Image (cartoon, rainbow, N blue to C red; front, side, top):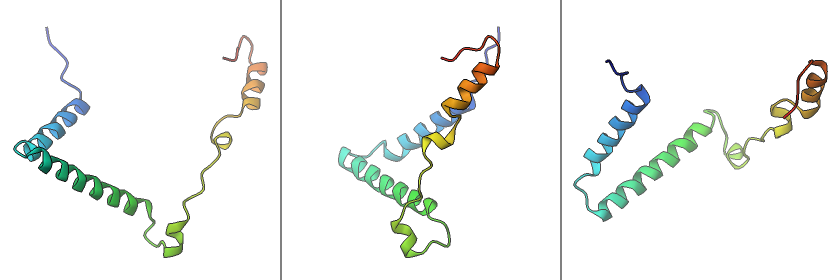
Length: 93
């Protein structure tokens, strides 16, 4: 009997966990807390940099990108019911 190899996502997760264990394995609780604070700060800064376009001005930073209303993102109820009425044996949830 052969078994399936473990999924790649599981291998990646385990490798990451092993890496973190090597980094913080011998740290005290205070050192671990400082480590995670630093890593969190780095992540937040990197995410902010990724959100900003390369040519953004200082004025653009204060105004976030407008969000698309949910009604504009998908199928509206009226078009769904039109589809249901035109499709035989279709029922709406």
